[in-house]
Amino acid sequence: MTPLDHCAALVAEADPDRFRSAMTAPVTGRARLLPLYAAFAEIARAPWVSQEPMIGLMRLQFWQDGLGEICAGRPPRAHPVMEALAPVVADAGLEVDGFETVIAARRSDRDPAHPADTAALHAYLEGSAAKPMELAVRVLSDAQVASMARDAALAAAQGIGFASGAANLLRALRALAARGVLPLPELGRSDLAALLDGRTTTALADAIGGLGAQAHARHRAGLAAARSAPRVVYPALRSGWRAGWLLRRACRCGDVLRDLGPESEFRRRAGLAWRELTGRV
Image (cartoon, rainbow, N blue to C red; front, side):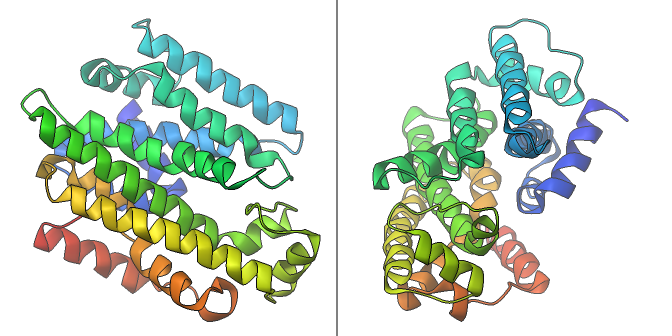
């Protein structure tokens, strides 16, 4: 199995939404996106490789050091994802600070304490979702993309990526509660108990509605910016194609626990196919 084949198999299993969106790119675009998405998958699961949090932090440090070496132009470590990613990083001129932002966000995944405030929550969503989409846009952009179009693409990634991260967080609230994690700063221990029981509280509904409204506004801004972005970056932006419907409903009902059921596989596939067919994000 080649390093690229390894990356494709890893992303298909660990992150099917990104895998499906990457497959809407031309073959050359897939070869750029899949190693990047494989690195994100490895970073996202690193904190959970062991029940011992320190082992997870050591794994994150491994990725930070290895990606730093790649970004500095040094030979990649003997790891298929790093081997596949090294030429992508070199061609796109990616710098290590972007990856460090992603890793910094993931370091907090094992922290049972909720974010200190809204700014901390937003920083987490920027690092875990918006920055990865921005890096994906960068690897699909080439020298022929005008600077204004590239700026629009990056603005689209920042808006759509943030919204996608918020949508995924809202959908994962009960799973996070089962791990003892309070992901929204407004919540207390009684809200955690309500999450575990499938109940809602006023604070919980307000927190969900508030984040949903903020993310929905960012989503609209990202979609507006995408209209001025080059079509070559659309496969990267499409990785957040499921965010809009969840955020709209969260804004309307303020309670994803009771009002939102699981999304059907047909809806997931059809939504992306429609965007690819119509040339939309």
